[in-house]
Amino acid sequence: MGHDPHPPRGTPPQRGWRRGRRRPGRPWVLCAAAALSALPGAAAQDYGSVCAFEGDPAFIDLGNDSVLKDGVPVSGTLDANYTHTYTYSSSNVTAFNQADEYRKIIINLEPCTGTVFLMVRKTRRCFPNPYSCIDVATNTRAPTECQWVHFMTEIDGSRDGTPTFFEVPFTTTNYFISVFAMENAAYELTVLADTGALPRPGNNGRITANQTEKIGVNLSWEAAYYSPAGVTSTYQYLIYSSVLLEDEGQLNRAVFFRKDKIMNTVCGLGFNTDEPVKSVDASTCVNGQCSAMVEALPNMRYIFNVVAESQRGMKFAYAGGVLKTDWEVVRQATNPDNSTLAAIGAVAGSLLGIIVMTYFMLLNIYG
Ligand SMILES: *[C@@H]1O[C@H](CO)[C@@H](O)[C@H](O)[C@H]1NC(C)=O
Ligand SMILES: *[C@@H]1O[C@H](CO)[C@@H](O)[C@H](O)[C@H]1NC(C)=O
Ligand SMILES: *[C@@H]1O[C@H](CO)[C@@H](O)[C@H](O)[C@H]1NC(C)=O
Ligand SMILES: *[C@@H]1O[C@H](CO)[C@@H](O)[C@H](O)[C@H]1NC(C)=O
Ligand SMILES: *[C@@H]1O[C@H](CO)[C@@H](O)[C@H](O)[C@H]1NC(C)=O
Image (cartoon, rainbow, N blue to C red):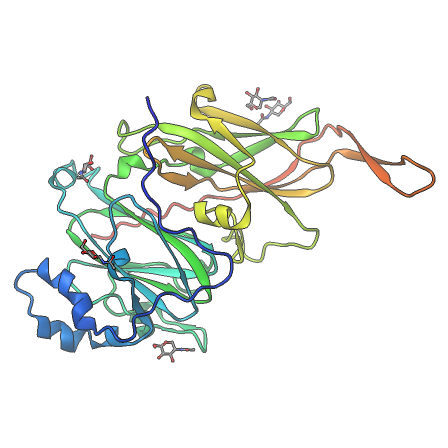
């Protein structure tokens, strides 16, 4: 099977902060025009009074970029306490006529760095209003008070820095989405009605590692799968690895690794590493088990992860893991005149210390 060209992506997030493009002078009525035309019977003045809060300058409409296309990720950067608004509409009859089991829509918000919340309203405007339930100044979060929301990220603090993945019944053609930043953040947002195009990490994204005789580790993972199956297949796996400093710790078990170093999202891996250390063709997997040899120096902590990429160009990250290489290190002065030390690795023979993170796939069903 050939490798189809990848869908165009949004501009990659920059390191450092770029203010979201703001259109302060843009009255909400203009923004509403496109959505209104899709909603016969709705009177413009209803929105004017009911959704007046959308006129607050904290709501940033990205113009044409705020209209999401199926399966095309958009990326954005947001300062703390700002909101990007997006709309998604589908008139795809084929997608609607699928069996209930497969008539689903995926809304996936991945942080590249920082904490972002996803809030979704179905069918009719207004956009979800994060300011009705979140006060950044006092770090107050009142999930039950969020207005104009049908479903949203768990905002109580337990999920700060984690991705939000919704796969919900595809029951309506229009979705109104707010992406809110709790702190300066960069994110990637994807809406996908053709859910079979997305690779899903096998065995809940678990990766295992085995020490080898050379100075390296053998990572293994279960092949990605698709639901429904048969829409596409896996093209390749991208392997990422990054050294952890001695004092770098994980603060919250739910976040991999920290919210300023997110290593379990495709865009976080891109943000924190220069490039994948390796790519592995999916055809090299045997009986649904894949593996890759990765170089690793003795007595260091590594963070690593695998990203599956489908023939359709959609990517999804595995859970990732941290390992400490535990080869026995013999320090030897190579030259008595200077103190240069050479590390000679001798295989210690024990398994690597490895933490396997549970990969969160939130399968929340909202009717
Ligand atoms: C937005 O999209 C419309 C219709 O596709 C196009 O005519 C217009 O030039 C676009 N505006 C910008 C700023 O890209
Ligand atoms: C956050 O934005 C809201 C809406 O614009 C505003 O009312 C609030 O004062 C802002 N909070 C901070 C800490 O800037
Ligand atoms: C409509 O949905 C079907 C099934 O999800 C998909 O295969 C097809 O590509 C979609 N068509 C368009 C034009 O997006
Ligand atoms: C690691 O190596 C040991 C010994 O060679 C083997 O028994 C075990 O199955 C391997 N584990 C993995 C995950 O490859
Ligand atoms: C790595 O591990 C996999 C599965 O555990 C095994 O099939 C493969 O042969 C190993 N590769 C190397 C180079 O040891």
